[in-house]
Image: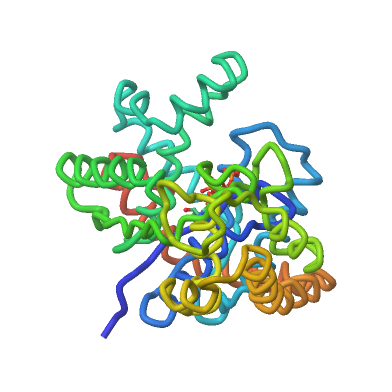
Length: 334
Ligand code: AQP
């Protein structure tokens, strides 16, 4: 029996991934690759929608791929590749842009947020059409499921609308995908500002735990994480966002339930709790970091693995693209 297909990706927007990317995405991908035919890409074309240094972007792309593998994505089981290595992504994005309404694209809240933050002159058309490229990523592979954070839900809804519109206008070319929305307990917040999502592009470093950081540096950041004055280790997202965030990280990485961690630290101070969490984080990330650094020590081998996987991705993607070209009436090259 064929397995249902899964698609997800991350932008190579920093030298290291952060713990939110690990807990919110990579840990789930690692689990899901067992039961799904999974495609995981490093979406470098998406990263171009904001200014980048070319040499740094190349390096970040390799680093992101290395961290996928170090975190347990198996390139012999899952199709792990770099988006720009498969030219069908950009080609399908063009076709989809012709069935996307201007107003429809303008309603995407992520674009509205970002463009109001940067101003229209500093906002590229690429940022505006970002969700159309994302739709192309997903639809090229006849994807059944797309695991995403709730901030991406609107983009998957657009993808579904475009797939349905295209299928009814030209005949069925796409599977209509379903989003799998990450649970709230998989959402990680900034250690210094625990009501804001932890992010690769956070303005300050002190609130972000990086996968590739020296473990002692991560331990220090945990010891300095913002808590509250109550002094009890208790989950209450509303009133105790700092402690709740630390509990979520603890539970996710140790595989334990939050109440059992609360029991363990009942009547003990935040210092003890933070020390315990630092140990959990260092134990989990130490080996991931070492594996990633070892992979990055041999970039030629990493590039070879990525090339093999790009070949696997291309086989599926080119088939969809050829069908779409036929359906919209492009003349086949003789
Ligand atoms: N704080 C988080 N908690 C849980 N999950 C998170 N993800 C990101 N931050 C958290 C998940 O990681 C994947 C990364 O997707 P992305 O790189 O395309 O962009 P993003 O979601 O915008 O992640 P960042 O780290 O905040 O990057 P920048 O700063 O570049 O925008 C997604 O699956 C996301 O849900």
